[in-house]
Figure 1 (cartoon, rainbow, N blue to C red):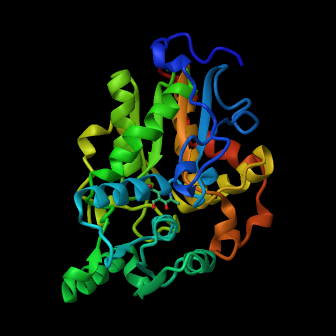
Figure 2 (figure 1 turned 180 degrees about the horizontal axis):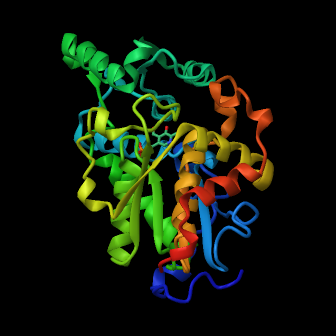
Figure 3 (figure 1 turned 45 degrees about the vertical axis):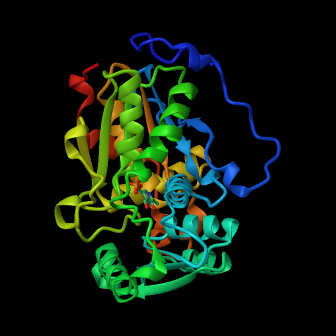
Length: 348
Ligand SMILES: Cc1ncc(COP(=O)(O)O)c(C=O)c1O
């Protein structure tokens, strides 16, 4: 592999000690994390300067199929340690889907029942996967989005508070902690300590907060950038438009160096591009992450930009994402980049 970036700080000792790949496990929970980091080369060719590299962490390789396996395992682990979760209790949470799948998987692996409150319009695939893990879905008003699920979940718990353990991903410090302890160190190791920019979508914000904190603890010069939908009525499942949403308690905007807003249309175009040009089929939030990562990369003379592909695309095949995709042409990505018009006044 060629060197990543000359300007980046070089690796501390732990960078050289790669974790041993797991050959065998006694629980599916041990298989969470250590996902591959893929360099995006074909899509970025001719669009970014030679000293700029873009990588995506493929979180679809987690056993539950998304980045959410990490916080789900950590929140349950800490709940058990504290005695908040104990035999007889039911795990309940409001979730836009991936956390639900992850909690359903973790609950099944540990023998705890799981109930999940979600907007009724989440994809059919997600609903079926949740049920296949033995969890019980409870549907909230689709017009109220993820906030409607949060409010209904609160109501259910208030009616029967002793019955439930609520991981509460929006307010639980174990969510960003999971990323501080796993996603951040993995990216640091996988880039040999040369990552310069980290870009991630805002849902609960756990990924960007925890990973960003870890990376800045290793090198304060690393820029941490949050990505969010550009509009309240977006089609980017898993992401929040903060200005019009209930703001998660774990979110601290002051820790971000920048924020990038991405339109649903650009994100969908990027999903098609990643599938056809790079051979990676991802979900819409990953398309949005790639748009934001590419925007950052186009503004640099040199650097190593890392983003998160939260899940793979097969969970969304029945959604609006796949309406009209046949019209997609590669020049749409070039047009997207030319709209930013940043290459003429690039910065480092
Ligand atoms: C598909 C997808 N992308 C991105 C995110 C955002 O991750 P986080 O909640 O860590 O901000 C989520 C969260 O649910 C998600 O499901």
